[in-house]
Image (cartoon, rainbow, N blue to C red; front, side):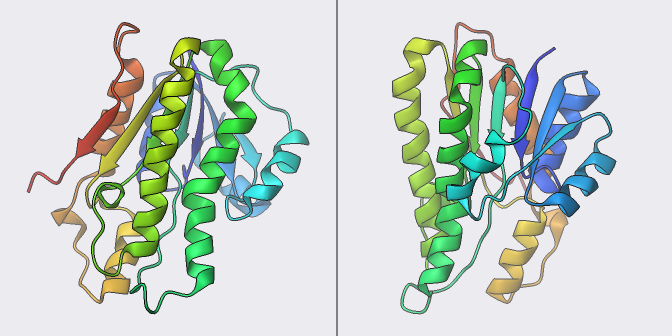
Length: 229
């Protein structure tokens, strides 16, 4: 049985991964942004351990995690949480850039820094749920895409740095997936949202579990998951 930390477990891909891991008897630790959210996650995932730390203020994560009981080892960290704020580069204010960079890039880097010794101990796995926008940027997606391009660079550098420690690193690039974030993106785009058109979060969870379950003689570096419809 492994021990896994998951961000963004309240809904969408993160919830699907957490549920699947819990169902097969793994120990799951979830990150909540505040105490109210922690209570919700405890009710949603009985038996899970819940840590509190706000990804929107990554500079405070060191203090927050330093004042809570942590696992003794981690077989994986699943960086799933994210935010999206669309807008043309000529219109998007600095705060929108800062929020997306903080949650989507700086916070994963800081959580990784703080907990990497626990992953090294287990010769574990770091999974970064990126986005198709992390490979190609489109009009009005500049801020979000920039944060996800940065996340790809983070994962690539980390993979090269930690290979000798037996730590595997995987980036997963889902296309449009039927999640609350996708609903928000459609709303910001002024489009009707039909979840049936997009990838089921369970399908992305399957890709993530395939990566972490892969025998130790191999590593999935980049996994692109596209809508099949």
